[in-house]
Length: 403
Image (cartoon, rainbow, N blue to C red; front, side, top):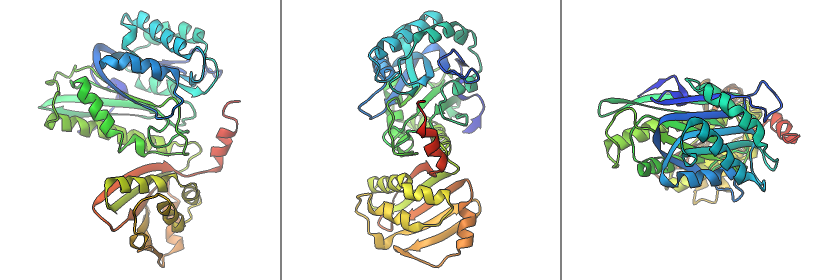
């Protein structure tokens, strides 16, 4: 397996585009994106667990009931959530793009992101769709820009991998910066592959993967209304269709996980106002459930996040977060270390503080990628979660997000 260029256009048969159609007032920001496959695809998706869901999710669920799709349309700047005519607008988006592409409206994935509770005017989208289709090409980055809201960095990746000696490719783009929390953290992720795989196994692969990836990301503890991760597989690589959980399926899972972990790290690192990517690695847990709950608890701790922003090796905040994780953990066995490219430093052994150099700890924690390493000393299970520091800018960004 190797990293390649191309994002969602790396796989055979996929093209993309992104334009400014007028949903957002800032004409320099793209606000409409399209991903299209030459052939109908096996499709799979997972959605937010928030009881309040954006209208596009309702429409997309209906469209993917047969496990098939051929295109994705997404607007930014307006979430199309909590609107009386939201489903109507999402359906109209499907019909408009389907007519322009010459495919069925039921084969469209619809997504929206942005402000909640504001009416979404279909007119800018309607006027922009002809240009959106004309611009289809090797334009993954344009599509990635078209789905961004408060994101400050482009999020895309692609990898190539072999199935029985045949090269397959898988790539993805993502948006996500705020309202990010486990159990489908707020994000939109669109993944494309030319690997041939059945819809049922594609759904199984995605549903299994997110438990250790997108559900292990948190920026601020808020789960959004519009989260969606979709995968489209058009089979144009020419491999024998994967219909069983065999070696080919495991190779596909590994490639998918490479894409999703990369995008998770990108989302966490670009958290609203963030200056540091935090990775919490837990080992020695009694079971995987405990490992995940501890990792999530630490990465979600506002006090820990604030300490990392200040490069303060306040390991007591890590212990505190472990303590309220509601897990069967023997705190007297817990070890904690901090690590970055500047080195690693042990700060807690068997639940108690130890002597360490505050100067060295500060040097380590001043880096923009920090690993919080926790050993529970109770078993063989492990887990990883991703997050970011908590800064002054997070409040500034969200203090006037709507206005």
